[in-house]
Each structure stands twice: as C-alpha cells, then as structure tokens.
Length: 355
Image 1 (cartoon, helix red, strand yellow):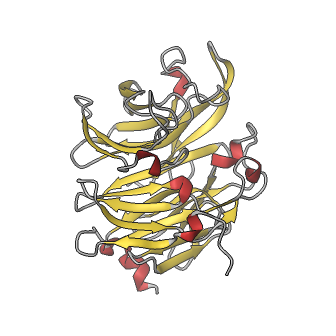
Image 2 (cartoon, one colour):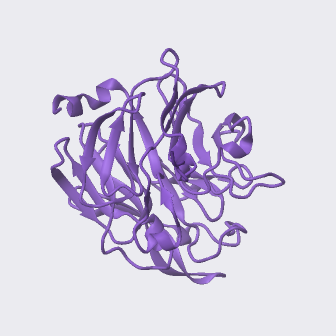
Image 3 (tube, one colour):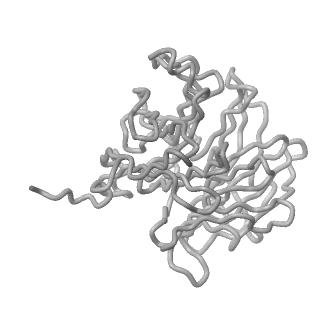
C-alpha cells in the first residue's frame, strides 16, 4: 500500500465533532484551487449543496439574506500590477441563485482581497492603484469603493489621503510593493474597519467624515486578516503572526475591547506552532458564543468554545495546484480557502427548497 505524500491529506474530512456542544449549522467555503466550486457542508462533512461557477474563486463566497450566493471570483483579465498580484486579486463578483443561474454581476479588474455584501444591496471592496506616496515614492496603494446594483460608485475612500507611511510603517517582513495592502473590510454602522496587512494594524474610518477615528497597531496584531465587530461591540480578527516579538511563528484569534483596547479573549493552540496560517485566515463568532475559525493556508476549519475547547474540526479533502502563474509563487498541491462562513439552519432554507 502506498502512503499519501501530502501531509495534510492524510488527515482530511471531519476529524472531530461534539454534537452536544457545537453550534451546529452549515459551513460554506470556496477552495482556492477549486475550479469554481463552492461547497456547503454539514458537521459531518457531507456536501449539502454545491455551486459550479465559471470562474475560480478570487477570494470567498457568502450566502446572502435572500438565500442566493454572493461570489468573489477571479477576473480572467485582471490588472497586472506586480508579479504576485494574481495570488490575491478577485474582481468578478456574482450573485448566483441555488440553481447556479447568475442574477447580477460586477467587474473591477483592480479589486483585491476582501469584499462585503452590504444589507442595502451595495458591494464594498478594496482596489489597488498606482500612487505617489512620500517618502516611499511611486507605489501600489489602496482605495475603498462602495458600488450600487448599477455598478455606480456611491462612496470611496483613498488610503494615502488619510494615513501616511512614516506613521503606518511597512513591517519588516514585507517590502513596499503594495502599501498598506488592505486585506480586510468590514462595515459596522457608520464605521468601516480596515485591516492593513503590510503595516500590521487595523483602523476604523468614519464613513461620514472619512476620518480615521480608531486604530490598533503592532504588536496588538501581527499581519492580521478578517476584522469584524461582535454583538458585544468588540473587535475580532485572525492574527496571523508571521513575525512576533521574541516568539515562534504562530497564529491567534484575538478579541479586543474597542474602548480600552484590552484583550478580552484569545485563542491559540496549546502547542502554539500547531495553529499557524502565514497568509489568509478568518474567524466568526457564532450564535452560541463559540468561534468558527479557518486556518486558511492548510484548509482547516474548526470551532472552539470560549474556553478554547475544540467542538468541531474539518480539513478540506481536495488538493490541487494553483493555476499558472500562481504556482510559481505557491508551489505544490493545496486545499486552502480564503474564508469559511457558518450558517444556521434557517439561513439556508431557500437553498434547501431547491434540492
């Protein structure tokens, strides 16, 4: 009998499930090396529903309040801004019904990383563009756009007009090819939270005044992703931890009081290096107080309770190489996904009616 040489592949599917204490529900993910497939699974890893789309995922997919899929696909004619650009661009957004019919599309060849489908039907996302930012000089920087269903820009925010490199410095593990690389967007009321990957920090922008009104910087977070605000008003994010002061590489989930900036909750593995995603990553606080975590680089999705006890663990079982030219930067076969999202039973009623 031959032994599978892909380490993670020897331990795939549903690994553990605590039926009594898990929040239950269904998990949605779009594998980065999947050819346009999005899976919705139950706690046992059974595929409850799947979408087959014409574009590989640029980033992730979500289930919208109307039961349709909001998909962030990889644009086939995306801008070519620098060699690694193809790793994290999206740019082809689709709203897709449960049968797979496309109901709405929006394209932006400069989109990268994250996007948020807003309750009013608008789409909020980050784009990259060339700018002259002293003292760096010519650089790729970021702008945030909000577009309506007609594709019209109804709000935008230019990063280099409001923050500056001598205050938000590029972290030592990055270069200045792309500053500050906004990899996470999250709107909560009139506040817009932005994750700045290359500077290791999160800021909040008042959408009415466009002023930066709050910040959390290194070492509170390190090369982080996926900021959000909990029902308690705390800031939650996936803290990647590519570089930490006096520490081995490890990731954390952190929850901060936004007033005092006190760390109110933290998760890291009992053996810290066992939980680490050097890129991507997501976290969602669930309806029962548990946390759904996506260790993106290794396709591991799991749930822990507030005590840090494992409630559920699943590893995406499909592996494939990234398409060219991405496979020049990320070699080998992968099961990674940008984010995973958990939904209650009633969130997917529309989907189940069409099965």
